[in-house]
Length: 499
Image 1 (cartoon, rainbow, N blue to C red):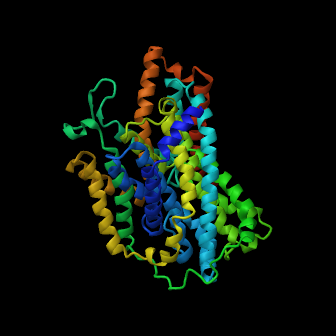
Image 2: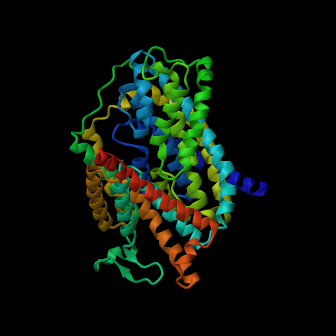
Image 3: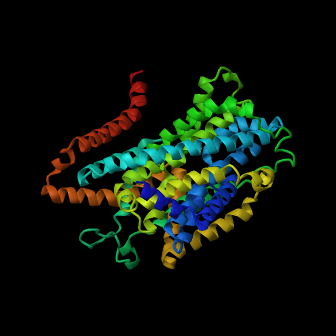
């Protein structure tokens, strides 16, 4: 073990990898601070650029970008009440009132310190929990893995949609799209309609860029693409200092919210938005002065920032150990793993332990860098958050096209990106979940292969999927989750009918 850690440290502690973290954090902070962009969009745009880079450099860059964007979103939320990322909406509840009281600088600093604390606690949890979970996952056979993925697909069906039924529809669409191309076991064509470019399936990067980035641009254009209001030159506040006493008063809230965020990150499909609001609500309910929340209270800024940053490290636990993305951003990063020939799952830690531990080391280093990299941006945040949409959107659309084209140097992939940009636009308008579609698109091939392997081993007996305690547990959990979503939907109708 010590030899593996030494090799991992040698891999991680290079100038190139340190530079990747710094660039990722800086880019993520800037993009996260601009309303209309978010970390997932930024990662999706950067992934195509990583083809020629080493896997560790690429993943470190993407993780730095993600962590930087999570904090960057709080800048515009605090200064303008216009969160740069969805999870920063909870931070704005108390951050913006503090800015109006002349304490914008103090709010930005407690948000930064809380973000760093949440990220460190989460990454330590990842470092400690991933190895034993991965060892347990090695006991999974094809049947157990198939039932685990089926359960995960049903669980993530609620991601990004208020209706679980609409989430299931999105998940089903993702499964159908994943079946396009050559059969993984017989190499027969499926749903290609004699289009030879579809033999290799729908390109993951073209799909996610269109579904996540282009669709968001189209939605914002539909809503008028209004710019954020320009803050006053001194809006960062006259009371910018954060005292040690003030930080100590928030430490309990930061720790508890970090644990909440870590739990939300480790559960597939929950995500940082839920974590941020759960952290905020817990801080308010456990406070001796709950009436101060919403009026510019320091713990009201610290709690959601600790929670949403704690999601980042913990969300990698199911991906690294089981091959299940813990959030939408991790699903995109999982695509980057696949691009570099790394298959997430329990065998990843067996076949590439030095790589995984090197990544863990870089994550902890990125937490330390996170404390310093955003500091210069605190003084120019009021200008960064006010980039005119009429300048921003054309640049984003050009980057979308370049990113989709760069995968296979094919205009067909650009067309795929445009198609799914329109599909994602209508999905968001109709309340369907692009996130559930994307995660299902990634997981469905793994589910199919494991199901067919299990059936081949058992001679076609369906009972193989309930032949072990592990598979039975996941099968029962999947059925229970489906029944719960149905009864939850029918319950109000029945109550209404009985009255």
